[in-house]
Image (tube, rainbow, N blue to C red):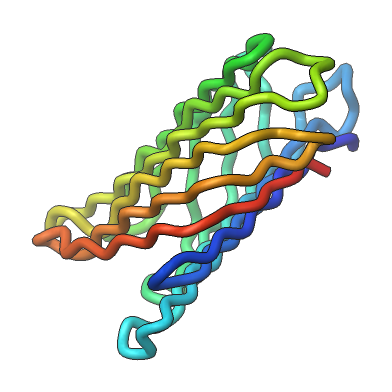
Length: 189
C-alpha cells in the first residue's frame, strides 16, 4: 500500500493541535483499502481537558472519486464506536475538495459532516501559496455536539507548508466557542 500521509502541527495563543491522515488501496488495481485519521487538541487551560479523536476503516473505492468504509471511531467521551463513512474526494492541479459524511452504527448515533477545500498552487515552483479551509460538525438526537472551522494560509516550499492558523471550536448544545490563533507547519510524507 502506497499512501500519502499529511501531518500537521499548529500552536497558538490558547492550544496546540495535531492531525494526520492516510489512506490507500491494498493493491492499486483492487478497490479494497484502509483509511485512518487522528487528531489531538491540547488546550493550555487545564479545565478544558485534552481532546483525542481517532478513526480507522476498511475502505472500498466505488470509483475514482467515491469511497465508503466501515470501522471505528474513538473519542474519550464516546469511547470506541463502530462507524461507517462515505467520501467524495477530487484532486485537481492546484485545488482539492473533500466531503466526508460519517455515522456511528450505534443505538445513540452521532452524525457527522467533515470536509475541506485546499489550494496548493502550481506544481514545480520553488515557492507557492498554500491555503486550506477545513470544517466538521457532529450532531446527535440531543442536538449539536461538536463543530470546528480551521483556516490555514501560508506558503509551500520544498514540500513543507507553513503559515498562519486560525481554529474555531464549538462544543455542546449551545455551541460554546473557543478560538485559537497561531502558526502551523505541515508536510505530506
